[in-house]
Image (cartoon, rainbow, N blue to C red):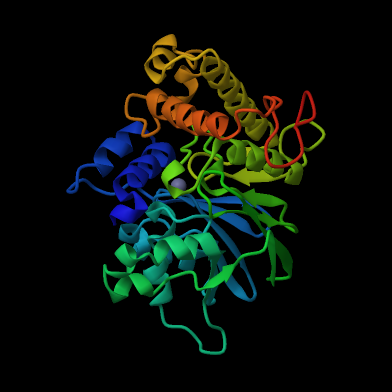
Length: 340
Ligand SMILES: [Zn+2]
């Protein structure tokens, strides 16, 4: 599935979700797959880790809603874990974006027996469907077509009411990709972010799939708009990242600040006419590398810096007469100093 950058995303999924050792195993086809881990988050929401990207599960009397479906190879084990929680129908799948470690299980979920009166609906932003139905993707056969998010939306916001709770999808334009959705469970007070937020690794700004650093920062700021900390600054709204541990607002603030600071450093270097090789040699991320990079990271320092350099260089070339953008601003409102 070349279109979907399968190898790279699988590597990212395995690495960030279950650690470096598991990543090495995942790259060896005969190795045992990582164990799945089902964790209660808050209210009706659970996180299932180890199947590729994190899967968010919301359960109740009406059945199950999933945010992302993991890798295709994990689908049977994912279904078994869901059945431990809830024996009702899987009624909704929301895909946060196009990468195969997040949509790979769609086909298998769509193939499960279902009550025609309670059909499965697979939802994603229309850019996800567009990228999954390119001629290259469709040429891979009819199996690819089953499990497509044909319940696509193209507005900035889509809402769903399920299991007595309001669930709101926000399209985050040109962030990790051009089809990213952030999902807010308003009653349970949980936000599921997809790969916009990956607390253990640098963000993968997928320029080939329409991502951009300004959109990434805007999306992180929007996630911070949706989260409310408890009085102790720990807890409150919980955040399920695309890969990695369950987080809260403070974790997103730290990650957003890192992306903004590195973005500013790379932009300063571009303004000084430094080449990409000079920028890499200057090691502009060295204070963050110990926290966000391991020897097996998919998003290496060079990959992160290259994406920023390429994206920001193009932006500078496109707007030569424009004043430099203010730090911390994206497509949405600027971040208030100190917190969001
Ligand atoms: Zn991704």
